[in-house]
Length: 284
Ligand SMILES: [Zn+2]
Ligand SMILES: [Zn+2]
Image 1 (cartoon, helix red, strand yellow):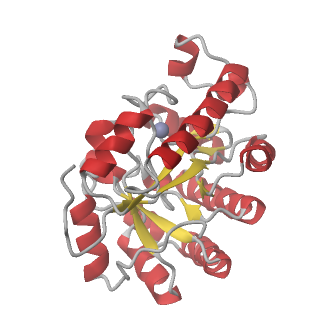
Image 2: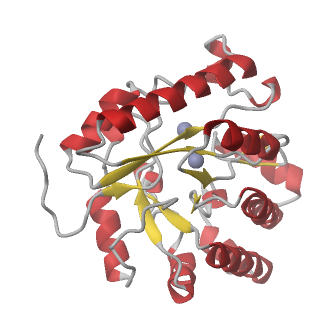
C-alpha cells in the first residue's frame, strides 16, 4: 500500500457506488475500498443509492438487468452487509463510514426513514435527483421534460430547491449531496443562480443546513463532463463560507477508476477559498 503523505488528508464524503450494488457503476465494493486504501485516504464514506419504493422509479439499466424494486431492496440489504464487513475488515487502516444516498421522488422519504430504522447507517447523503418525479441528471432530453413539466427553467430551479428543503427537513441528512445538481444541463446556470427567487431559495436552504450542522458535498463529478467548477457553484460556496458551513470533497465514485480523481484540485480549491481542510467526519 502506498500511503501518500500529503499536507491535506484525502477523504471522500460521498461515493463508493459499485457495480456490485449499482447498475450504472463498475467493479465490486471491496476493490473500490482497496483503491481508497492504496491512495492513502484518511477515511472514506460509502454512500450507495437507496432502492426505489416501487417499480415506477426503476432506471432503464435496472429494468434491462431484470431487476424490480423488491430485488433492489434485497440488493441494498446486501450492500449494507458488505459495507459493514469491509468497515470491520479495514478498521485498523482505513476508517470507513457506511451510509447511503437518498432520493426525493414520491415515496422516497418514507422509505429512507424505514431504511435508517432498519440499517442504522453512520450517516446519509441527502440528494435530489428528480423534480416532479422526473430524473434531472439522466440526459438533456429528460432534463428538458422536467423543465417543461415545471413550466420553465427558473421554475425547475425553484421546485428543486423547494424539494431539497423538504428533504433536509424530513430526513435531516448529515451531508447534502451535489447541492445545485439542478444546473447539470443548463449552460446559462450563473444567470439562474443569480435570479432573485432562486437566490432566496438557496439562502433559505443554506440557513437550514447551517442550523442542522450538516456538511456540503464538494462534488467533483461535474469536472468529469468538462464543467468549469464542481457542485456547488462558487456563488453558493461563498455563502456557505460566510455561514460557516463545512464543504468536504466527495468523489461520487462509480468504479475503481473514479476513486480519488480530482481530489487534489478539490482540496486546493477549498483551501484557496478559505474553507477548513481539517475535514469533519460525517455522522460523528
Ligand atoms: Zn449513481
Ligand atoms: Zn447523487
